[in-house]
Image 1 (tube, helix red, strand yellow):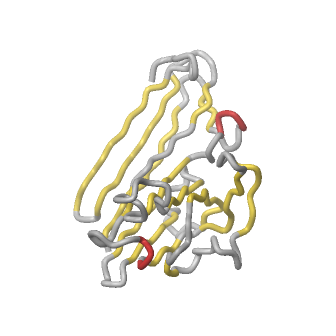
Image 2 (cartoon, one colour):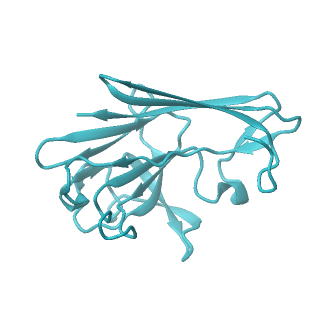
Image 3 (cartoon, one colour):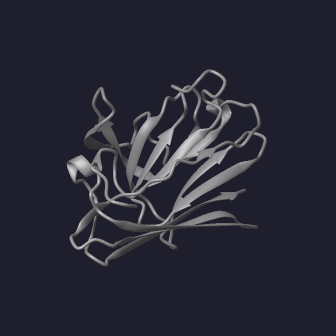
Length: 192
């Protein structure tokens, strides 16, 4: 990544995609090639679908997050709040139904292996898990309600992110890469 007016730091970025019997795994890396510290954040935008042509309304979703970000009318985070007992509580799998999500979740519960796992299941028995390691502290979940009608609510975007939206402006959880310093993180998708 070469310096530009909006981001004047030089980073070496690496991405490794592996597809195998266990699904897709992505390893991302960044190294600061500049002479000064660089702010850094990374996110991915995969869409998950478990049934051809069906809407997400009939799917079951589990998101292992204890908190979500509250946003203003422009979609920028203003605070965080607990999900317990709210319409955003997907800690235990439940039907998406008519829930509209364009929501950033955080305070992720992780399994013994350090991974946070989001499960999306179709009533017919097909399912998929998106997993992310500890480098990704946020998950944006989007049910696609603002997409074109033919794409609306056909899949759920589950986006592993290192920091929340608007982080380069707010400074919230931005990774600080010292000169020569590096960062790495892994996430993936496993069919079930």
